[in-house]
Each structure stands twice: as C-alpha cells, then as structure tokens.
Amino acid sequence: MEKLRDILENAKKKIVKLNGERICNQTSNRCGCCSGDYALISLKEKIEILKFVKSNSGVKEKVLKNKLEESPCYFRDKENGVCLIYDLRPICCRYISYKIYEKDDCYKTCSPFEPCKKGKSTVIKIEKNRVFTKEIPLKSFFLDDEEYYFIDDNIILEYQEYKKTQNLRLSSIIDEIEK
Image 1 (cartoon, rainbow, N blue to C red):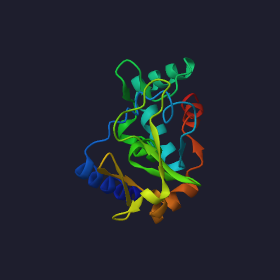
Image 2 (tube, rainbow, N blue to C red; image 1 turned 120 degrees about the vertical axis):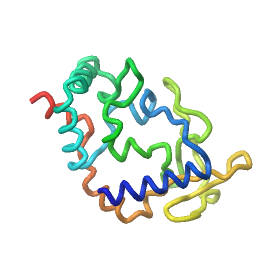
Image 3 (tube, one colour; image 1 turned 180 degrees about the vertical axis):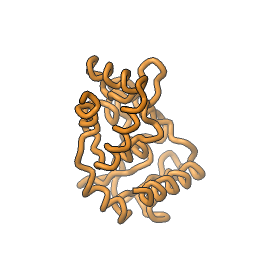
Image 4 (spheres, rainbow, N blue to C red; image 1 turned 60 degrees about the horizontal axis):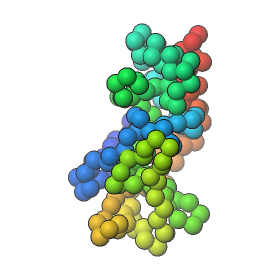
C-alpha cells in the first residue's frame, strides 16, 4: 500500500508541477465524490482510520454526530470545512481530482477549471481520440489550448492489486466506532 501511495503521490506532484494544484473542493463536495456512500476502501485503510478515530475523542464525537445528522460524508468537519481524517484519507478520496476514468465511449475527469458546487458536478467528458498517454501513469488532453494531465490508474499494476482489496464501504467504519 505504501508503494501505491508513493506512486500516486509522485504522479500528483508531476501534475502539480505541470498544471498547478487542482481546485477540487473534496472536503465540501455535495454533488458527487463526497456524497452518499460510494467510497470503497481496503481493509488496511479501514484499520488505519478506525484506530485513529477511536484514539481521538474529538474526531470520534464529530464523526458520530455527522452520522446522526446523515451528513454526506461522516468524516467532514462541517464547522471548519476540513476532512477529519485528512492524513489518513483513503486513496479514493486522496486523488479523485487528479484521476481520469475510462468509460466505454470516452474518458471522464474532474474539471481542472472549477470545483463542484452544491448540486452541480463539473465532471467533464473527453473523446477518447483526444486523450494521450504522456509519461506513465499520466494521460493528457488539450482544453482551451492548454495541456492538462491526469493519473491513469488503470496502467499502475499496484493499483490493480489494490482494487482487488478495495471492497469495503468507507461508512462501514462507523459500525466499528460505535462498538
């Protein structure tokens, strides 16, 4: 898992160097990546997060309060607009705005221009013939005469292995916290 995190972090650093930080508002997104219970994590991630939350009473209290209030993400500090588990956030949360996803007829990714807003996703669709592999694991495409880079996790062997273990819902941590 550490090797995968290093690979993804190095890819992200290359992207930031080429294009700058993404303006994704992951910790406040109510229209996609931080809403509902789609986030899948591995058992190792679950154990790390669970240990952290159980040993931090303030974080635990906020997480349980978020559950009672049916917040879109139980791990978001609503008052401060930050992720309560930022340093341990799962891979699915960590790199969402830096990844490109291949679909049947296109690629999809987060807009490099603007963050999602309440009720409005800014996920963009790119025709397959406009997307190129640059430096593995990066793909790029041109938008408004500028080249933008994204991580293609499909070509990272360690990510393919990780995906085999990524079978737990992030919210499943809550049941363990309450015990």
